[in-house]
Image 1 (cartoon, rainbow, N blue to C red):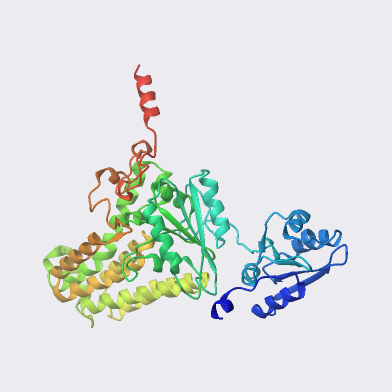
Image 2: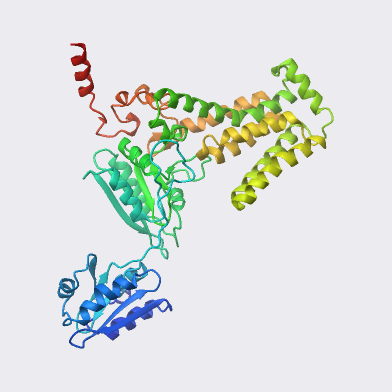
Length: 497
């Protein structure tokens, strides 16, 4: 008896019975029934969800043709009569309810077995604009939006190849969020694709409002302080990563696409690096790495130098610092903690406040509070300069700001406890953790550890496009050739002759 109860109810040929069964499952007031008659006075009805169904299409492409013709007896006759671009049969009540909740109405005709699902979903979308997290001077300005179908089309427009694969699945017991796995067949590692699909299909949660939920489930170390999954909002970046052998994950309702495998070196790269000269791109990447180093170690080095190793500071600078810190009530460690806490509070407030209020808040925090704190003898000017420089440097690599903030505080703690030895020990611990971590078989520190010399051509320094003739070896893809250099060699030989 239990097995029979679990089986879905089959849609019958009785129109009223079908409507009653659907309303029993979907009793909400926004589930409406649009009744009309065919040309030979047979009762017809379309059940739809108000607000997410295009009622104009429902009237012009469904109700009007049926009101002028004889009622169809089968689903096949109904499809021929309506000439609807998107339609399919719903055999049971559960399938029909799922389509209705997705925005697709289900048509019932008295005497016709089953229901016809009509693709008249109405989705309100924002325009495709440049994402705020990846603004570039040169290069494409398109960004993903919250509709997964639109995002898939942006990828398809750039990768016009039959090798492009999309595998869709629904995640969330109540949200039924459409999650799509995209990859290039023959380029992406099949083992990685299968493992991602298995992990996503195994997710059993009430709802998935954003792709960040999926990232937590497919991460092998979800509690790691370092990212395990790459993210991007730009179609050109995503397509470039897929061409290298990565797998993309798109979630309906989120403009952020996920990419795996992930390497830490990705966050030091920018889409603009590929639209400017290799020399300029190399300089920019070196500056980002130096900025991250400064963001991490400047506050800790300042605290360690003041407490333990004064000889690390040049004499003239030491005299200036000592003159400004004699009357301070706080120790160097507490002073740095206080300033870093104020910095984090200002950042959090500016993100959540309205744009114009946030601008005024930043000015007040930087000028008024900083100047007042120095005059009151709470903090020193050198400490404010170091914290400000550290905070600005961290945002040269936006995807690592959260990680850098936590590690910066940890380094200040050990610097205030045991000085430079603590900084060295914690640095060694961080490096050990990074060396031992991987993302779907790809080491986070690749291609530095393990050292893959050929892959270094697009990490710290960037070579010209002809030197990037093979895909990164760290991804272990079967198809390694990315660029055919025979044509260039032929041109060079012809020019010499």
